[in-house]
Image (cartoon, rainbow, N blue to C red; front, side):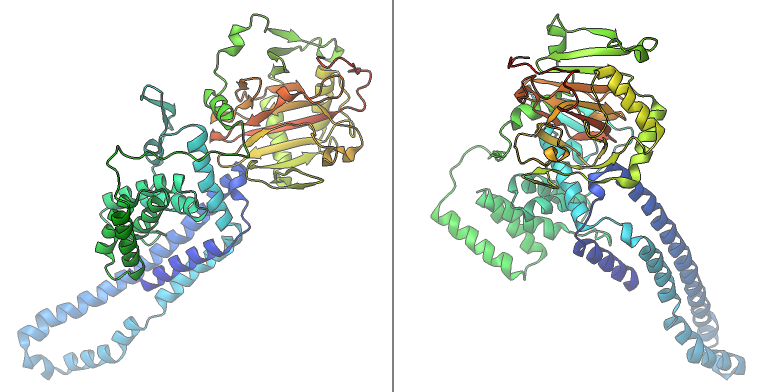
Length: 544
């Protein structure tokens, strides 16, 4: 392998690791842009391969010419060959100039410099280390929330085990994309680096298996190796209490790297611990997922996400219904909206075909240039957090006539005043890899919330429009109310956040489930209390 290609690989990995301000993983729009970026790199690499192939072809031709002279003329004629002045001249000329021209040719450096120049042209738009971490964490999030079988995921399929032990396909892609040993190593190392040994053990086990199956062939693009995976896996097992297996893995690692002093010390340590505390013969230990304190509703949330909106609750309540709805608005008399009442407590309705495909595409195009990492209220400020992975943009009604028309339609359908500042500008959101928003309230639960900066009270209602379809996942789950609503392209979901007495409705605790496969876009219109005095009068009754 060319030393220059090895240097390029090292240079690429170094640049990938030292950068820290990535945002690509938070939006599928940016992932699509990254695909276009890699297309440019493919073109530059193809050009480099063609140039290098031509250079090597020239070297092969020179080699064949010289080899033929030695295997025919010089060997057959022996001493007589040197007596021929033409043979002598061409030999001297070849050794004086042709060999140095081949050995010290700058063509290889020039070719690699062209490749590096092309790479440099797109380097600023390449994923950063934070993107690698975020994408890996997205995969682990999907694994957890949807109870995915890691063995199937590594093979490119999205499957989970039922309580009866059967394998069920959640989503089977038309073209499965399997992961390599190096892919699994990177995910496992991301977990390892934050001492998440529950995930690091699982992913590094797959990495070791795949590296073994590959025949230990080194590949220049790999960041890890079998030795790296064994090293991290052994320590992960040690941290989970499986010292016997940690010892076996460390001994295997020493067969590949017998002079590794640190691993030799680990082996001594593990052997001593096993002598002091001999393992009890039991069945194979089972990894237990760590409990969480910050997300008390985790089990209910994940169970609802796994239903993907297919739970039978809607069909068990005979009072739920569908109809064509006008809300008494003249604007809707000729084009009533198909309404599906999903729940009465809290009151949640789904308006089908609220937008058209062209309107949805227009809104997404308008938002794309302004998309920024989504934030959440944190005291009096706002900040980015791991429990909300998406990008968002705010569109005023003046951004395009279609936004104004959308506001008019929302106002006609809800009867509420949606003009600023009585409602917030339209927020357009694009979710990222495993993009989600864990259980939260849309209304403020603290007097110091930045939501009150509009001076128009709390968020009384939410109007959320699904601007796209997804292949799997992405449902909106209402945790305490125990139902979820799947992504329905062009439909809009509406619910009241507050009771008529101004108190928050606890049953509106909801979440955006992680997007398993697909590109999820939504548009949110949050309507505030002030300006709705006649549209939704107050009431002291806490049940209204």
